[in-house]
Length: 337
Ligand code: NAD
Ligand code: UD1
Image 1: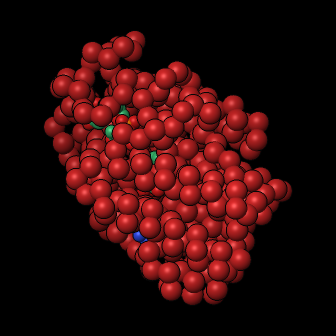
Image 2: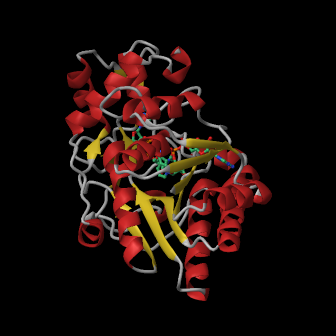
């Protein structure tokens, strides 16, 4: 049994599918602050298996203790968290409370239950403005906003905990830019309001919900002047979690590992690939740079390959066509139902 916090969310729901397909039992613990129960109904439709759902908040230590005592999971995958950078600048205390206090409460409940295997969702944002590329795991860490700092604080908390008790088994997965959707088109990213991230915005332009894309700057030091990122298919990312669990079964450790493809694409590359995948035009206009953005960011994915035997398999065309199938079939996300 795997206990998945935030399992109803974008990456969590895709990971639930892969866990169920691999024969694991799954309990999702989620407060649904940024997700819909419908996502888990769809997970059941895809896999023919259901997940146990516990509605609860990771800051509620009593609820967590009860849930862990009831499930006796072999491991926890911890996705629950708030993730909007701009919002974190406006509401830093809410971010520290939800992400840091929430994770602290989870770790205390796990220690209490004697469950010491954890896979944690970190982010490439902990590298700050890259000093060199591709980013290796030993690149210096820094944060430029409260969201990123909450990830950094949690990483440090996990490392401190491991130092104090090396029987913990902890995988810190640093995601690059997750995109795409399950190939069924039944689950996908369902952002509330105006999407901040590029691909959901592009998808909403292609489906006709928004007139055009703003390209945030074309004067960066990149091949076409627009920002370059390491987009990774969410199903590849989900499979990385299963590989991390497998490794942690073999030995205690606390290690950070990049999950990226190692390849960077520009904003205009993404627009072009999405137009091709969807057969729809994606009009855009160039606007000024978005505050806090960096020119380029992509992973060195070799550690994941060496330690987990994992590499991303799905290419840009698959990322775009799967995102399009989800967007086109569910133009308003899960609310379409
Ligand atoms: P998401 O918002 O779709 O999923 C997060 C889930 O956690 C949601 O179902 C939400 O309801 C739940 N949740 C939030 N706070 C909670 C709380 N206090 N108690 C219980 N449940 C709570 O986000 P996602 O894209 O699936 O991201 C999952 C994790 O990966 C997050 O920790 C995020 O910071 C991290 N991450 C995401 C990205 C990305 O681009 N999507 C990149 C790097 C890291
Ligand atoms: C954002 C977050 C980062 C998080 C990452 C993955 C910020 C400042 N950073 O990074 O912390 O880890 O998502 O979730 O929000 N773009 C446009 N127009 C748009 C949207 C984006 O041109 O409408 C460009 C951006 O300038 C960037 C690229 O597209 O060059 C990707 O943007 P985005 O999807 O927001 O991801 P990141 O900037 O990498």
